Image 1: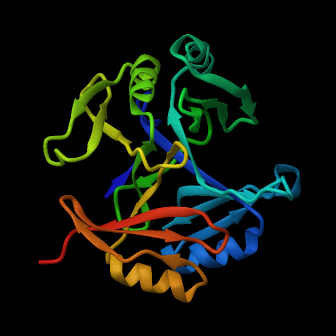
Image 2: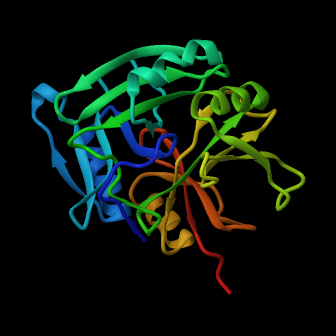
Length: 255
């Protein structure tokens, strides 16, 4: 379990949120799946909703403002202590600034970025809102990895933007996987080169107590799931929510 009371170091995944067509239905699904409670914001903020576990912020969600949208995913935000300075490095590193930097009331300052492979992510400079206040425990964010058919431009870009070092993964020699590490060598996630991937996207993995039970419950709640499987780091499953949003859940392997 990790409870956070200060902003994460720069380059660390710090917040996730989801824009979907039906906020109430999403709260029913994720609330029942993860035991989350919800603080629904006012109409002037698009009903932006903070998802909480034991009163601590773990994610956000809101109704997607585009009525024609058909593609939904959990958005990832990296911590920065200077949103403007980090954004200013994007073009030179090979990425594109989609929007921002902009203030979000007193909550923080943000920008939306697209990397050279087409994956989007956010930057978050904490104000009153730190980001996730609980991570690395059941029903919270565990990690994020980029899946892309073109990994080398992504490696170069994120190393330039966040001063990451890049390490190969000897545990999985048959996979094109690179660990991303902050300057203090803390691992923040990784980049998986997958030639079969149709697009580049940052994935979201939630820790759960029991992958099989969570997968079964997701189906009961109107989602779908791929068959849970064991890998070197635990037992995983890919779940799709009622809107088509894919995410992963993982738990330690059973003895």
